[in-house]
Image (tube, rainbow, N blue to C red; front, side, top):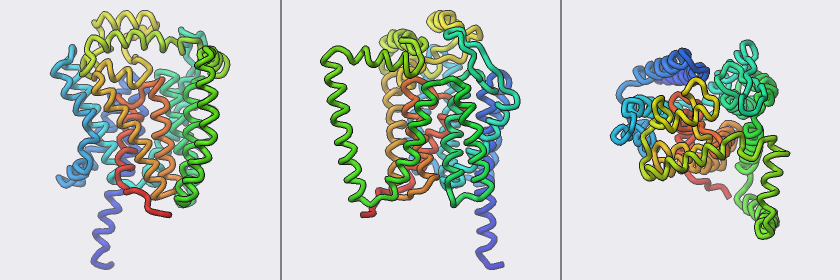
Amino acid sequence: MGPKAPALLHARAHASLAWLAVAGGCVGILVSSTGGIMAALGAALFLALWAIVIGARGPGIWSLWMRQPGLLALPVLAVVSVVWSAYPAASARAGAQLLLTAMMGVLAARLLPPRAFVSAVVTSLALGALLCLAFGRYVLDPLTGAAPFVGIFAAKNSMAFFMALLVIFGAAAALDRAQSSAVRLLGGAALLLAMPLLVLARSAGALVTTVLALGMLVGGLMLGRMRRAERGMLAAGGLLVAIPFLLLLAMLALGGTLGEVARDFIVRVLGKDLTLTGRTELWAHAWVQITREPWLGQGYQAFWQQGNPWAEGLWRQFHITGRSGFHFHNTFIDTAVTLGLVGAAGIAWLLLMGVFRTLRRVLVEPNFATASLFATATCLLARAFVEVDTTYPFAIGTFLLFAINAYGHETGLPTRR
């Protein structure tokens, strides 16, 4: 054994520990998403595994967060909002949890290469899919009268989101020849399991964004393998295709028929009512709240609190008997209510930079692992207009958002011609 062998073994041990923290931590997030007492147990598992990683790395681990300190600005704002929050105790607790979730997402990207990260995530999500298959249930939606499959989760949207992510990471793992045979087999099996479960969740938005993300997975990889001149030709071709489409939209708008086309798309293609299953009503209520505290909001997670008359009224209107676990079904609007326009700008920046940074990484390092990060970033951005996936503590979307931003930050601009 050479002089470098102990250091190599030490590095491998740290990498294995980080892989277990990502896989086990995502299982903890999955358990936390089921609600009730399991939420606390899942959060405890997530924190315990990452505490072991931090303890093993020692004080030097703080330098990994200092490479990109601005990335944590939004969670820090959530913590600071305790100063003006109507419910300071709730804001302090949730803000600290959000900051921890974000920090662990960044840490995952610093400690694991993308391919190992993909294998860890697909392992945990595949376990979740198996649990859904074994213990899942159908729940009646009082707003639509439908009974979607929610799996082990508290709501169909959570179920659909987890399965959408499993489709993305499962495809990336299965198609990546650099992954081990076991991981590729697991990815393929997970992909085949996730697709019907996604359909059973009856979420049109999740289906649309998943198809979009898969297109980005393949398209991003193809783009990364092109030379610069070929990318320029592709961009020019895309512009030629986009111009007639934009002209058509302009003609419809000028003719006053764009709204009719949009309504037909919502009703006939997406299968939703014109309120997007009550979303437009929620957004109208949210704008009233935003005008009350426009710049810094009412405090992180200070709106959906028992005793707040506005929240109580919306819970009654939307048949939320548990009086908890609700949001405004739009990430930017939801954040503007709690953290103001400053917070909304912050989350918009993170989502947009996640797409840009991961695309840049695919261009420099084209493979299925980096392409899956770009696809996930695209999925998170697309879903942000109708869901809230990336601003809650111990949420898979929050963890992934900060991880993909950190992964994207690790590379420079492409130089190939």
